[in-house]
Length: 457
Image (cartoon, rainbow, N blue to C red):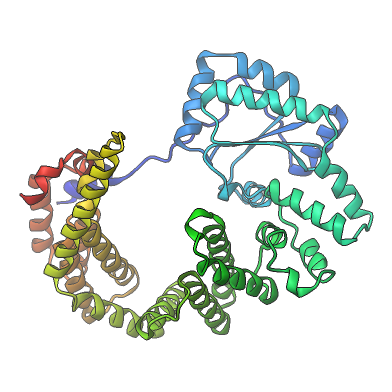
């Protein structure tokens, strides 16, 4: 059985893929401050190569440079190249400074010696795409950089509202928020203007932590937009919602770090207000409680407060376990029918999208969502609890999870629970069944290779 476990884990493991350094490109070695000093000395722009951010697209570009030296010649001649590993401490700080975690993949960023960005390219295609963006960066660096000039004026103490609006707009454009400048600007303009079409983008682009006044303005604007008849024609409601959710995530992280339960309650209240503003109506009491319970459960899970986590987890599991399996499968069928109807509508309009690879996933959407929710509870119990009663409870949830989805990860977790409970023979039977029905590592291939007609089988 041990050998089978080893083969199972090997099949389920996924290698971490990134391109590494671009072939032939010379990278500056030193600290961030040393890099900026060298850029100033040589009067060259800097290419920040976030090689852990792009994964597959970044790997493609790295592979192309092995056979084509044109990129290396261009970048070595015109830039100081700096390799940034966003999974390291300093690299993570740089990535957050330029909001790389919220950028499209891949993103090429070029900056000046003062740290101000001169060109940002999101979603470029391969080596030739990156070369084209490098040409734009070279040209932009030769011109006077507006943000750099504005930054100098800001540091010199310029604070009139017109200047601050221009400065904040430029910071937003480069995804380099300055919350201090935003709060200074808001203090200079009437609060009635905070929800204007000119001010809302400044708030979204520069607010990085939860601030009651600006967030209230965003929620008020969102509420007004949700009641607008042409709401579907605007992307602003979605952008405001994403901004508030990001602020809530940051605030929740602060609550976990400080183990601050009161701050969690503030996050819950903000999320509930967000949902109300998005829908333009009050939330049902059941949903209000579910949102609150979800945040508290996650907070106690991350702070390892097992005594407060357990009753919340059991309540959520009870809610999920009392939903009839047949009703979930019925929702799968309804969702699949909607999927087919959307496909037919697109085909009538002349579109021929490759929908077959999504068919199976759509036909099991509700089931997989239920399995995911149950498995989250099971995994936490398996990793943190040792009492037999807790593990037996988790085993029952795991069994229901497998009624919805028998993917290798869920089966593996089920066997772990059996082994922890001293039932290795049962675990062996589950693994043997798994090995005969499906080879490890091919589950995702099976998902996308089914065709719609197989749904009724």
